[in-house]
Length: 205
Length: 205
DNA sequence: TGTACATCAGTGAACGCGCGTTCACTGATGTAC
DNA sequence: TGTACATCAGTGAACGCGCGTTCACTGATGTAC
Image (cartoon, rainbow over all chains, first blue to last red; front, side):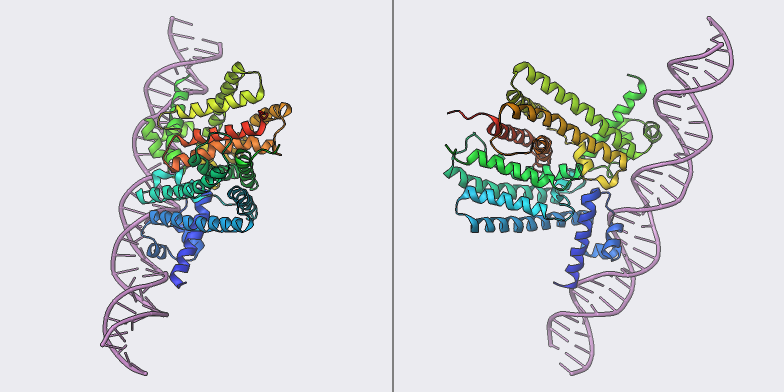
């Protein structure tokens, strides 16, 4: 990695921390460059303007999340051939992952962008939409595989169920921040897991 | 209602709209007073500073939400004596209520405050915590009544389940904003309802 | 009922500070011939 | 291998604008005697 892209990453790390704690507008370039230890003009060498920073943060978030979920799926695949079992394992692994972050998960940049969308240009809003639609697609595919083998006990829309995964994490993050309790998010993921189990798992007589 | 508190309410309405769309810091007092049709100094007659506005918005939100949920509980109580049925009716009514808002629910001020907490003083953060703890208490009481009659099929913590109601709405609001689709939140509430049903309702053989 | 004073609900002008952005410049590294 | 030029990754100073907040003031309404 070149010297330049190291600096760029450092700017983004520092910016993301501040944005998740205070919001986008309240995070000044001045404070970002102070923490990233460069000058203001250095910031503008890497980003055309402040909106470009938001855009870059969301694009990076998409890549990182995809890697995380790919990894969880791969690990679940090693442990079971059954799509329902894989989903239940994947959700457990996700809960563990959320619990293993010291000081708790800092929050989701997509949620921040969603709640501040009038601040951003079309590019940023589209990137945010793509992020959420990507997650929907991923989980919908998995639920379709499950539903083929295990007819759900309630009539549910599988796209809505796929959204429930993201929604549970996003809601959990809001709650964990409001309650100042990092454990909340994984708790909510485990409740989602319980629902998936009750919805698809065959009844034991 | 006196002339003064009408103006105060108008300031808060206008401010809340803007804050939910752009965040707290990006919403200037200048813009608030322009839309509320008073002068800047008029704003400072009603609110000591900008933080006091945030505090007032959260306190008002708590009162309004409590009224809404009291009303939903009362309507459900008229329709059934069974606590599980009442919860299922209540969640259905909540979904309908969310669907009936033209242009969709604008979002939750508690979520905004949670994601911008470094901006606010202790008063505001405490008010936000109280809001969320209030919801937990309300729903926990209802789930305890249900669990007394219907043993849950999975081992769940009833406080976490109570949080799931708020978490589902908060997550749904984030998703509906990101997807620009107002229907998402009620969909998620209906999935929560499906979970509650599977978790508590006795099996039909 | 009249008068004096207090409170309510604001107005208007001014303040200083910090913000995002621009611009001319620079030293170090990379590339072509 | 040496030289010329280009690109990379920044620096430093300056800009004008908008922000939150303060302050002295004011007209309308309410209250005490």
